[in-house]
Image (cartoon, rainbow over all chains, first blue to last red; front, side):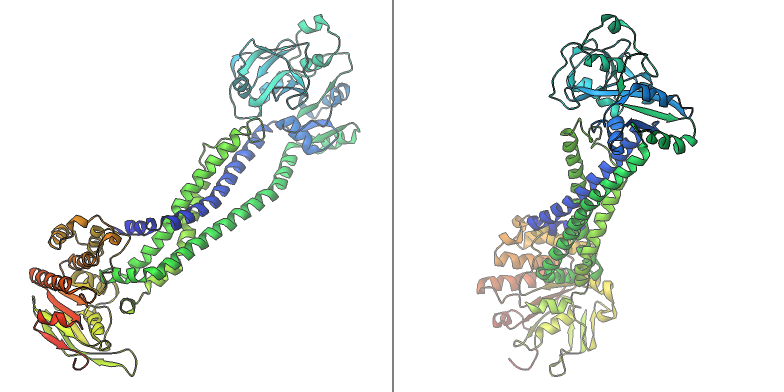
Length: 407
Length: 210
């Protein structure tokens, strides 16, 4: 027998009361856990995906939408821009590199993105099989795409028009898988990458077979005399002055807009922050209620237990030990609540990710433990300690003789 | 072994108690008789180190009880004084055995004699049971076993027979006497129960005549 065991015996003596308190606290802490896990990974992922991209240029519209569609591939593109406009901008001395993107098609909900080999370099991809595209309609699959759709090297598929699934299919040209990427845990995992030419030719009415056999451009813009469009451009600055001059210069051109990823991401987090704050507030309210619940449970049980406490004193327990006895009960409760809460949080995130594989939460994982979770544990124990202070003090002051004579 | 001298106590100005001095050796037995409200539970609490008297001194095994303060008084009580209450007051979340071990734990004893104690009191079979499954008589025996778990020098029993029938009352008194002899402990029984008078000849009456 020891103090811990004694407190434990008293807790399991009232399993319903104890269980309810643990569950309530666990619920509040689970919400906090999920928030912490998502926030940490989401911010990491967002920053990682935008790494190396200083500016995105696309059609006029919402700058946030431009960023979301061109970097994270979650929103719809703002529209297309003229290839000539795009090329004229890219001649600017302040620009180090330009990666054009052509979007608008999907296969089974995974976006088909036309670009050049610089895009692969930007995300420093590695191939688990095959190699990058050389000819029109060659595609490289992100690891998730290959896994989910069970596609292998050499397989053919036909893309559909539109960003989401279930639009009409392009029947003419099947894509051919020439490469499959290794998982990187970033946005590329969920993309089907191909050349800009592929995206153009899919939408062409006539079929020029000579064009289909020609090699595609590996860097910069495809060489063409035709009137063509691209969806957006990912720019890298040559020097810091570009950050000051380029956006203003591009935005003043009527047809185009430039959006800075870092600025838009922080704006997005600010917008999301309101929602996060509300949920956090809710979680804290639940935790406070849980703390009160524990306080009330301990305080009420104390009324019935004053006799038990007095008996313990006659058996040789000091008043300090009674204090410890009650505090331990509160702390054991909240400790278990925290463990359960963290477990529920991870489980909840795992379910969330499983149901949202192609969406924003797609690349997240529930199988990570952050040091913040130890803070949750410490916080919970603190709650238990505070909630049990007053009952413990009452126990400490129990007048043995009066208690024993009262019955 | 036990000496109580010049004990005075008052709950308020009107109700003032003076108690006769008590002197006991190892293995002595004493019956404290008195009507309800005569202060017999008060004297028991004072002798048990639970209630500090207004004046006077309680000496057990050479230590003056109320010279001890705080936790050391608690430990002394747990180690040297076994108290049996009118009602058994077994801790319900614990089993019979655990109740005894808790008493051992509070004073740092190993509890080697617990098993023998439970056997002698005829509750060994019930050692793993919760208190709610015991009969009144069994529960009372558990409380005796618990009071004896640390081999006390002084055994105090407060109305141990009042809720028992004649047969069980006799068993309980006999048990207390036996165990006190065995442990060479002084036994004090506080009661208004006339049945007990026949077993213990050494008697003190508090609060006037009966």
